[in-house]
Image (cartoon, rainbow, N blue to C red):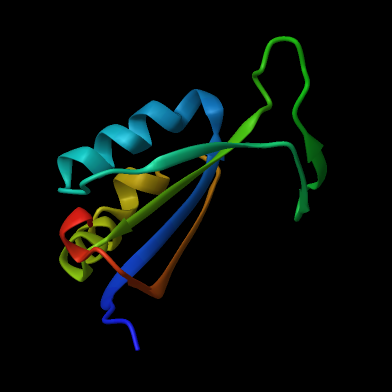
Amino acid sequence: MMDTTARKRIEIIVEAVQAEAVTDMLDRLGAKGWTMLPVIRGRGRQGLRQSGDLSGVLDNVLILCITSEAVAEAVLAARDELLGARPAIVSITDCAVLRAERF
């Protein structure tokens, strides 16, 4: 059996134009890293949304960050800054990692 370490997985879906503010906040709160992925298509409360607009104004991204419980708690404490007036979806779940020193 492999030894794993408990960590927190933070997923944030936000408009692409707001992504840098979110990643700057994660960096400032002590996250060791994050990954940003384009959101191609999705449906939610406001209906269907997809990327592809030439301006990119309506594009969303998924920011994924695996981190310590302390950093996850700091993100929760900064919820007003994270959410503010921007539309965003935020989830935090438990996960296990193999190389704890990287997170």
